[in-house]
Image (tube, rainbow, N blue to C red; front, side):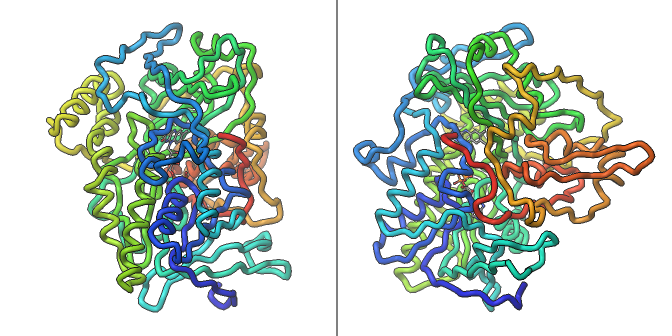
Length: 549
Ligand SMILES: Cc1cc2nc3c(=O)[nH]c(=O)nc-3n(C[C@H](O)[C@H](O)[C@H](O)COP(=O)(O)OP(=O)(O)OC[C@H]3O[C@@H](n4cnc5c(N)ncnc54)[C@H](O)[C@@H]3O)c2cc1C
C-alpha cells in the first residue's frame, strides 16, 4: 500500500469515531481554543448510525462538557423514575430490594436516552463550533511518522477489488495528519488494536474482558408502558452456563429497549448467546410485557468489561486512546457513556495544553494521569472486583461479595485488593467434548425471532463486491482446528449469522463468511478461540443503520 499516492490534509487533532468519546473531545478542543483545526471521521453512514446504546445515561460527563445542555435541546427527555432489579428463575422472579444496593447503583438523576440521538445532537454542537465531521469515512490504516510516532490515518478508501487489491475503480482515500490522533473507535477498535500491539500498551495490565450485548426496540401496549422505568435482571436463562443479564428501559413513545448481555468468558462452546436472548423474552414477566407489541429494531455490540485493572496504557507518541477503545464501562452499572465523555474532555484538555506549549506528536501523559486518578478512575476502581468475582465464584456468591466490596469501596477500602481476570475470553473457551450441547427452543416469530430475520431489523448493508472485512489469518483453521475441537463456535457466538459451516454429503465441510450481515459488534475478533479472525473496517457507510438505538 505504501506506493499508493494520496492527498494529505493537516489538522491539529484528528479524531477517529463520532461516539460520545470522540465528539466530546472535538467539542472540548474547540472550547479550549476556537482556532484549533479539528476533524472527526466516522465510518457509519451518518453520526449515530453505528451507535448501539439505548442507554441509561449518567449525565455527569455532559454536565461538565455542556452545562446548559437542557437549554440547548439535548435529547435527554426521559428521567429515570423507577429502578427494579430481579433474579429470574425459569417460571418466576424475586425482586431484590433497592436498599441493600450501594449508592452507586442508584439511577436517580439519570436519563433513558437513545445514544444515537445524543450523538447526533453532539455532532451539531461540534459543527456549530467549527469542527469538521465526515461521516461515511472509515479509517482503515494508521500513518506513522519517521520517528515511529502516529502521524495520521488513511480514510475514505472505496471500491477495493474483491481480493483486497486496488483496481481501476478504487478511490485511494486520503491521509489526514494530526499533531495528535485520538482513537475513539469504541470497544475493540481496529486501529486501537494495532496501536495497543505496536506499543505493547497492555503490558503490566490485566487482559481486557468483554460481553456481547444484543438489543431490540419494542413498541408495546400503552397500557403496559411505564415511561422512565429501568429494570435489570440476572439468572435465568443463563444459569451457570455464563455470566450476564438483561435490561429493560421504558423510553418515550411507548417504546422499550430490551437488551441482553452475555459475558464472553463462557467456557461451553455450544452456548448460543443470541438464542439465550431470544429465550429470555419467553420468561413470564418479560413475555407479559411484550405480548401484543412489535419489535422494530435489532442490533448487537460488544461491551468492555475488564474495567479499572484492564485499562491499557492509553497514550503513545502522537496518539491517545479514548472511551471504550480503552474500556471504561462500569460493569455493575452497565454504563460507559459518561466515562467516554469524560475521557474525551480529559484528552482534549491535555492536547490543547500541549499544543499551546508548542508540543506535537508526543505522549499526552497528562491525559492518562487524569483518567486513572480523576473521576473515571474513581468510578471504575470502586467496582473493580465485581467482574473477577463473578468469573471466579459464579452469580450468587459474587452478588453478595461484590455488593459488600462495592460498599466498602464506597467507604474507601477493599477486603479483596484488586483481583485479576486471568484468561482472555478467547482462552476461556473449552473443547466441545467437555460440555453438553444446549437445546434451544425454536423462535415463535412473535416474541422470539430467528437470527437472519432479526438482522434485517439492523438495516445493515455491505457492498457485495468489496473484500470481506473479516480476515482469517489462516483460512484452514475454522475447519481443521475450530470445528473438531470447539464445534466451530463462530456459528453461534455471532449475533448476526455471519459464520456458517456448510456440510454437504461427500464433500469436506466449508467455512462460509456472510460478511454482508455483519453488524460491527466485533465479537468474532474477541471470542474466536484460535484468535484467527481479524475484524478490519469495511469501506465507509457500510454496516448497520440504527434508527434511534
Ligand atoms: C448493549 C449495550 C448496552 C449499553 N448500555 C449502556 C447504558 O445503558 N449506559 C451507558 O452509559 N453505557 C452503556 N453501554 C456502554 C456504552 O455503549 C459505551 O461505553 C460507549 O458507547 C463508549 O463510547 P465510545 O465513544 O468510546 O465508543 P462508541 O460509542 O462505540 O463510538 C465509536 C464510534 O466510532 C466509530 N468507528 C469505529 N471505528 C472506526 C474507524 N476505524 N473509522 C471511523 N469510525 C470508526 C463507530 O462507528 C462509532 O460511531 C452499553 C453498551 C452495550 C453494548
